[in-house]
Image (cartoon, rainbow, N blue to C red):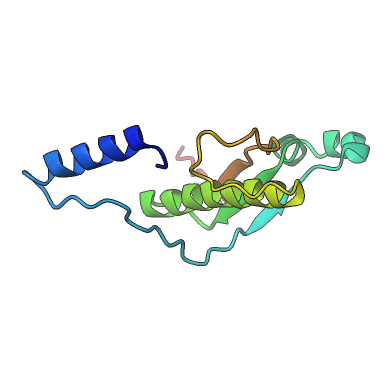
Length: 136
């Protein structure tokens, strides 16, 4: 928050919340190193081949993160995937700004328009399924 009204709002919230909780301002968020299992950016020249791949082709028709799991992912694992997706998009935006020569803090709302970066899709699917048993 870089302007005076933002600073005022932040201080007002902190002071009000301090009456009932432990409230802090300017809390730094450090991202732990994370690794995406597979990141795919489609090659437009290969649309025909992708179309013949069925579901995998459809899922890879846009920039996508793939996070396979042996079984159904837990809530914690899903949140970890979402965190990777958001962090990766943030990194792609940072790289686009750097490539465009725009050196502007991320939080600056008055900054010039930054290059558009597609938000990558997240595909998280169990890799194995238990066979359905039929009883007769």
